[in-house]
Image (cartoon, rainbow, N blue to C red; front, side, top):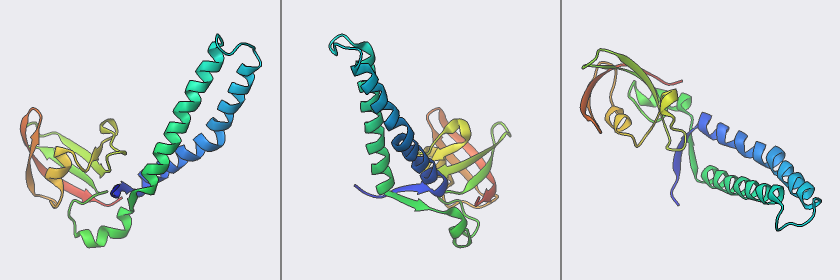
Length: 160
């Protein structure tokens, strides 16, 4: 498996979730299964089956997080901002203005696992990010969106 780009914040968030699953959730699942076993016949014990299912989900998520973190190429944007020379790069925060609506939007370009459009975190593989990479303030770009082409002007590039 190849390395997956991830911001420092994204990696920290995954590590925190992994730690919580291992230290809090996993022991709770073991306890819930143990308690459910005490209620007798396991074939018809809904609590036991629900606890086992949740344990399975928890263990699957732990494996998934461990894999993602082991293949992560963690990029700390604050350490590479000097080399970016004002250009939009992975991890940068970009303010753009739509030439169609004159509205401004701010996006942070992150890895696929960190993307959360509601929180303005866009995947490096999204059409918007691909159209912005390499641009500097005052550049124009045309984004190939599902609804057609959209033109934007880069207003500001930051490395937070």
